[in-house]
Length: 239
Image (cartoon, rainbow, N blue to C red; front, side, top):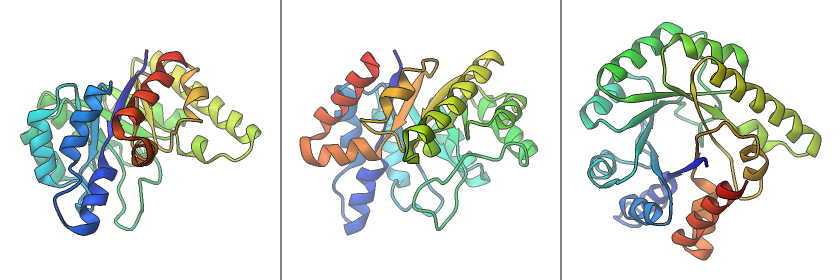
């Protein structure tokens, strides 16, 4: 069964809106793990718009499952990761003005830089994943970096409006999963997934972990975080 990686960034977003101390993403992570999440994901952005260094430091000490740190491939972030040592780092593209991550890494164009970053992280004992679009050439380039995993960017699928568009994007994702596994890469997925669109993509199989944040936190505002996490875990279990 695929695992759920709970992204608690948006808990921190609410906290930062008031500049106070609550709600605390550390507490949210603990509740999520008790409800069935088998990983906690956070994105420490260069502008620190939501997750703060303090959150990362405490989560490193308190997460019982797996801590997955999303970050840009910068010197500052690599130093932080090598010091904190999360179980996994997911390298993502990052733009200062974006509301959320807008697409996958361009591994082809940035092959040397990403390869060097992957090596530094792996030499530090950290599992590495690259956030990429479901594009065959990008996946082939990812393999060249010696990364352990790719995380398929599911944004285009999540934003598809018609059934035909959704099926088209699912075909891209299915092809990406098969290629990645064929060349020996582990496969995760995330971005824009919710309680409705998760069913079809989970039914494809081949994905080890789904990193989901916004839809779970949105549901948690209405039914509570424990219930929201359990609902998503059940969907993954029976997809």
